[in-house]
Image 1 (spheres, rainbow, N blue to C red):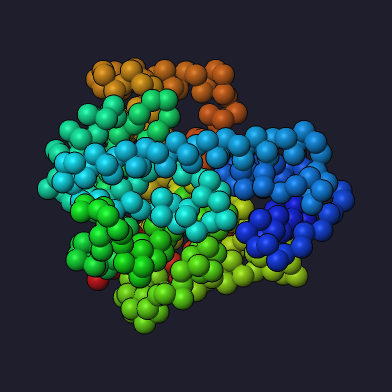
Image 2 (cartoon, rainbow, N blue to C red; image 1 turned 30 degrees about the vertical axis):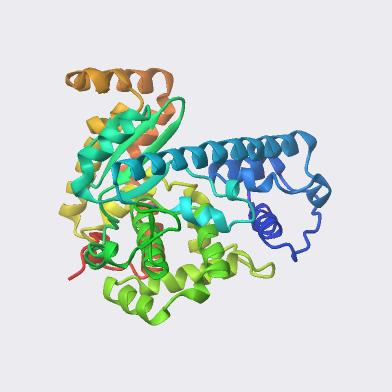
Length: 398
């Protein structure tokens, strides 16, 4: 069933919340259950909760669910804000330089900071302070979830996660080289010796690199687009476009950025007919964090259309789906955190549950690497935004 009216109305509602001058009109005959489900899927239901029922005339039960999401968002943001203050206070005491990243900064430019849903807190620190960071966080009741790689993960019960980043890793060699010197361009925040903020141009490049990484690995959702709208409205005038475009060109991401800007304009244009816009449909179907199917399609396309390589990739992907890594299994099978040697048992545990109790889901997972139609659709969208060769999909720039 065609849900174009519902999709367009979601963007109209978001526009009404973010722009006081936009007048939202009531539309009859909308599928509000679908609208609520899709907004929740994209983690933007808390934003819709800021609308009054008179503006939309949505069913009372749906309206209450949006309001509840808004209220939970306010509480969640207050908790995260308090924790960030506590972390930075501790880092100040311990002499740990730090830079809050991603939504922790941009949320302050939304009409209300709780509108920007944060899955976790992301903080950049200097790699030589790794042990000091661990000690400091343990002293304020955080626990270790995972160490190593580009970032360490800590959590505090009941549900707060902090990712401590050693670098602004973006999956792009050109941007990674630029971010290797990012500390040289950071400036101290007021009344602090160790809390820093990123140069506005570097912050934007980090945003684009982060968006591109998600786009390639699984897809991007409406929530990520909102960040670009807010940035464009509140911060872009302060940017050095020459510096940004030069680095995006070197990174092979200039076309991607331009296509995203066009996409955003189209999404929020009341008169734009986007029924057949593959890129918009891809965004809508991706949800807040992308999909496994998108990720698999992108992986399969790395080696182009060479049959033997596609078969090899399919086998590899199928193996990864049936036998996930220890890192991916730990979140659901928590006993692996203490007893990692039980991973083979956890694979059996997972397989039995999915086969017996989630049989249709099990079959769906097995079929994922063989979705030829999905591969063609993904290939079309990737080419539209400039990701049209193996080098780009491998995220390596010379």
